Amino acid sequence: MNRSPLKDRASREEGVGRISSQVIFEGRVVNLSVDRVRYPDGREAELELIDHGGAAAVVPLLGPADDPDPQLVLVRQYRYPAGGYLLEIPAGVPLPGESWDACAKRELEEETGYRARDLVFLTQLFTTPGFTNEVIHFFLATDLAPGEVARDPDELMEVEKMPFSEALRLIREGEIRDGKSVASILYLDRFLRNGAP
Picture (cartoon, one colour):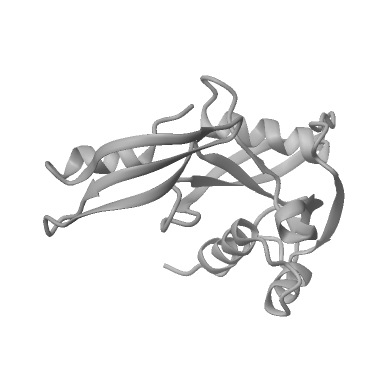
């Protein structure tokens, strides 16, 4: 897996961060530990940590980003923790040794059947820094071409295409509730499509 931001942060501040760690569970995607940590003010505490190697996610547009209202490609995916289906951008975890952009390209094609001829890095964010070190790396995909769908057995999803304006309306009305999708679509709208500094 790629390097954990938790390790990066601990190395920047001498004496701050993890003192010890007890692994409670090791899974396919995440590990759970109880860590003894030292805060910047010297206090110590025990914290539960879900260790996640990170993910790549991609906002795919069927037209150029400067199109007045390009078609957005989403997946409607069953999510057990959410109790049903969510509209999401394609995303996934990297294969061993795979770069973030290669992961984004692969996940886009596997989940939607589209290949990106043009992929641009947007930003990255911590998903829930109160208990996990997961970071998602976001990309914009344009100039899409037909590819091959190759979903995992546990990926129950259908591709949905809609105007970008419709996705913004669904975010506003609480119909798109997946955090990575809300953040990346609004980021794209604010900082690339509307020319904000």
